[in-house]
Image (cartoon, rainbow, N blue to C red; front, side, top):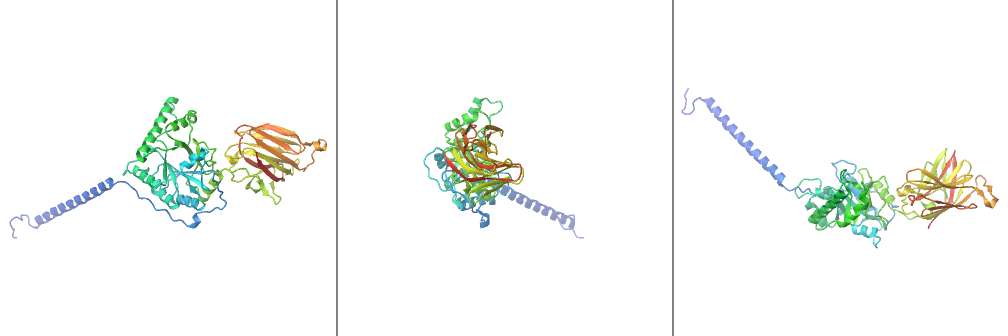
Length: 500
């Protein structure tokens, strides 16, 4: 076999050389790929984090309920509060994009129009302010990034405005991945004209266990000042409104007395409490609202659009109406009927208590009034009960009851702690009939008056019964009820309410 110069080892040597060259080529290629990947990763890290806004969802008409009986309320502003809007996060206060869009689409379809903080400030100060027929304040707590990426486009579509309360310590610089808003996003929101900004404070919380009142005051004041400095630096002006951390203005005895003064010193003029859940009671804002404890309706992940309208309707205080039979009544362990003769009829099918109560009516403004009615159906088996200042519709415990039995009249009050206290009583004899006992089934002309801390009851033919009532029972509506030891019906004929 011939051996050529430089090729000692023959074919095997040639094969080794080829393998070496291939290995070098592969290693070089891998190095290039690694370098390219590294450069791509570096570029991804260094490109500013600035997520795009999401286009609003298009909803079918069936997803946007309309309630023609939704009342106008140009003298009261329901305030709604939201937190995060997301299809990936989970939480009781995290709404999906679809549900949130349904909320705003429903509000727009039912005639709601948003107002500004300046309108709220004038309203609660008792100053003249012109509001739409169905005013509304939209608020968003904490300053989540979704208020820019998700909420803002939906506000734009439905021509709404809103307020976002920022945890100023969580505002980030542009390009920083975060669940919270960046300074660049905040400036875009400001420039849109759709947004106003309030403070959620940097880290204002309850008084620490070892903290003196003076130390707590100094810490709170420093937090408020730091928050205002941050907002001025980012947005060019301080905030006029604050949303209390932890949803409340209380936590220690000092807070209710001291906090308003501290807020005022730092330039705040309005303070919003946390949102009461849709299943609870919360009043819309009106001239009786305290500027330092403004209530809001908290929206939950389970709040349907139709339930939102009901929640708003319940939050709007209504004036007492003279025409009681025309109100909406609901049964409470009883049959409840408004007859063609404009009587409110209460019936029970077995031993126990039953009532007709106002349905979904906010009775916060029901304070001093007089109720007149003719009661029929009382006997030794059935007692008629007329309640005034029933606090259920005003979101507070307690009520006053006038119980008419066959032989006696009794007045009593339910205190805030749930206990009952007898106020007075009368024997039901008729002076016009020589003081004799009234016959079973007799009709009673009754007039009940509640004014300030005094309850007065008049039954035709009997002396007036007057009693002092507990100061906490200061507002609430009317309830028609009965107690019986078997199937019975009591009628409250043509009841009329007159405001005093």
